[in-house]
Length: 283
Ligand SMILES: O=C(O)CCC(=O)C(=O)O
Image (tube, rainbow, N blue to C red; front, side, top):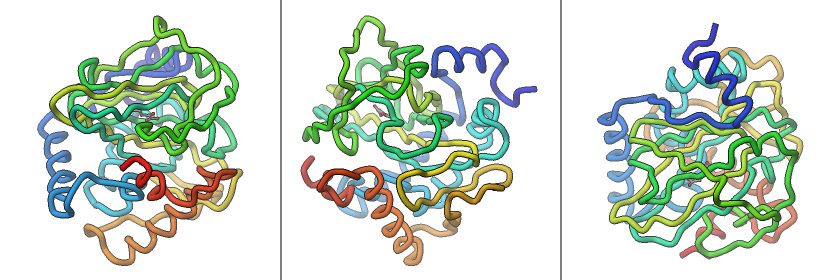
């Protein structure tokens, strides 16, 4: 018996590779989460950058709670069972009237994970729609194998390596995932997706959380993950602790170590050594 999704939705995810929209918190709660992020940004002098956009759930208790949100986990459990890891989380922030975009890609390309049983919960902290650069997907493409990608390191591309798939995408096939604050979409790690720039007058903020069953391994180096539901009987990933206070020194040190190690996996085969280097290129 599924916990949150209907059997038809589970079937749709299997055939189309995504589901959207799914409400996981109220609009007020989403506004509260945005306010916490922006209070931190104001305090520290500007938009969240570099390392701080990744695995931020290891630094802020309110994001540690979000990656453990019961509705999100119920939906993910319906797809991948009751023993779940959060592999990483990433803020995708597009500033108002900004050229930042995301090229067409498959998430699986550089993640080094042993199998494509990985799903992203993309949680909207602002509206996300055609007017502000919402995510677009090409339904059914998760059933393709891994497609070759080329790295562009384009200045305005929000992806680590600016990677894009090496085959033409027919924009007529694209579906825009329109979300209200507090709703999420779910997409499969092999689904082809991307998003255009945000020409609107407000920021578009998404928090993307990557979940997988505990049986998935990292094949490209040492790695860690957060157990968010059930038991980890495989121990393929170093377990990550839960932060109880904001930016505790020991968590900042751990986060730095993990970010450097993750960067070695994600940028392998290139000269880049850290997320902060590509953040610097992007200005
Ligand atoms: O936020 C976006 O527009 C793209 C997000 C994305 O590529 C992802 O979550 O995998």
